[in-house]
Length: 104
Image 1 (cartoon, rainbow, N blue to C red):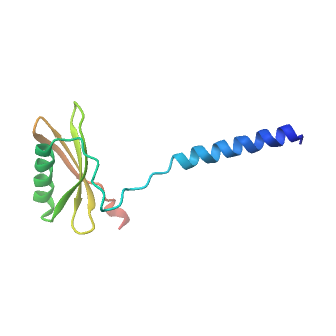
Image 2 (image 1 turned 180 degrees about the horizontal axis):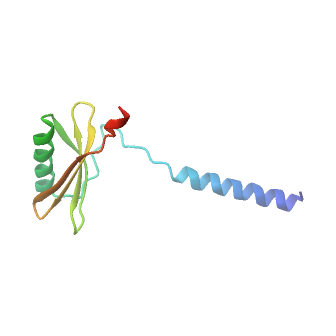
Image 3 (image 1 turned 120 degrees about the vertical axis):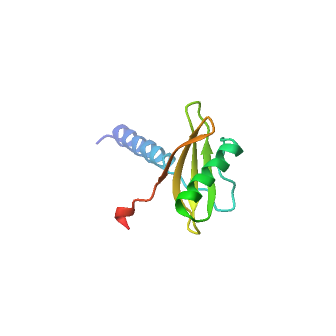
């Protein structure tokens, strides 16, 4: 293999490694605020809906507003088990556990 080909191969490997490294995501530490673009009213409605289904303590992990529906991710219990809540026009349309209970 020529020196040019070796350098080119090395450059491709470095670019691939950089691209892969850019794909990793880490969750923010517990002391950082959650990402929230949903309204406080929608978040409260989802907290009430999830608490009603689980009978446990709940906290907002994140919320994401969209024209179709706002997605509110809720942590349940001391381990913050993830639940998903969709709300549109002030009406909760879906509440669902995101835990794969079959794997437990």
